[in-house]
Length: 576
Image (cartoon, rainbow, N blue to C red):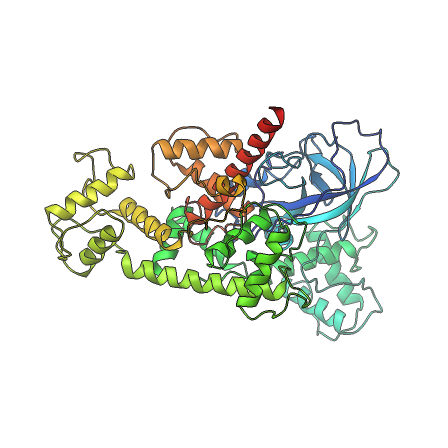
């Protein structure tokens, strides 16, 4: 199958708990069952002509999820198929609470052991969630979860038994001749919708209802003939088919998927859509669960803790080390935030120092307010359309003011796109690699790429983190963690040494197929987007900044780089 490289995670949550066991390479039959903690994501098999796709098109979802027919070992996809790292043999069984016992038949580029990439805090698994929009909806509903599971060798006698999450089924019980009531009424109405039931809807399962059920079953190849087992009976297979079709008619896809699909149809890229959302509409508050999906407390570590630390810093309420570790200093910082925001008053109050529901809600509300303020600021500052040389008016005034604020323009704010303004625009363009020289196409003209770069820099300026407070008790770790490797925003169309360095880092973070070209192309954009979602910088691909290397994404990658550098320095020191 399919290379199940970067899975859906729409949302995409990654919880951080310590695994109880990390397997080495072993045969499928030589170990006793054991308990383990996995980060489990979900994938589905896209079908042509869906109303929506996660990445906008059928082809893009096939690239993301695989062709959806067979696993890496050739097994046809089925409920209970799992993708696992290569050290887990095919056939090995895993019991997942709430789903059942599945077996490993697949691999994936992002399905790695803990530590295989910077964001893989535990061994990864992927579970197949079905086909078409119903499978997509299940995958979105599941997201990415940390789960305590039981691992069995392939030879274990435990049988596979796996139930896909239900999408609020209408038909939940078997019905046959002699049944009556509301469930039969619903069945008759549903069969009337398809044209199989022509009699009066009376809630009584009689011969006419059985004949209508048989017609439905034959058309869907649920049974082969009127003599087949289950013919004319609303059994589990017939219920599953009816529930699936009901879901297809009733499901309202998330706006994010509708936008992504519409934009893909019109040729708008992820980054272009994000830029459009940023300049033309106010940001929609991210759900608390999307920003901060779980309570965090002393002893937790990993990307969720790091994201919390970054978010607290961006909210202006955090002066502790960004290191992904929830230690006692972190507890003190959380309580300081709680106290300043009237969540708690005493260090002895229940929940003091915990990143619990009320604390998460408060931080999310502060970030929502910040995002709205930044969006308004950018809308007020950044011109929203192309401006030609010789133009005049409010848009030119905005452009001159923005370039002044970014340190490029020191002339008179005249509202006239004169030679001086043209020269400054050219200087900005060359600094961003948009044009190579004054003779390049578009040189000195405020076009789409220049507008996108200007907007990104204004956002970066507005969201810039405060400098690290100086505190003699902090170690070199703290200083290293705040020495940024990347300091400038990058987006689709940019090129140069900074893009080359970003691509090298992304390769080290697990995007091994990304070419080192120095060009911020669509492949780089998709890798950045995948990193943003998996690192929970963004919740969906339609948020402002999706696919662009902006302030929050820079902070997340810088933190990872610096953490790795600290570990290297510790190792070298120990060796010395």
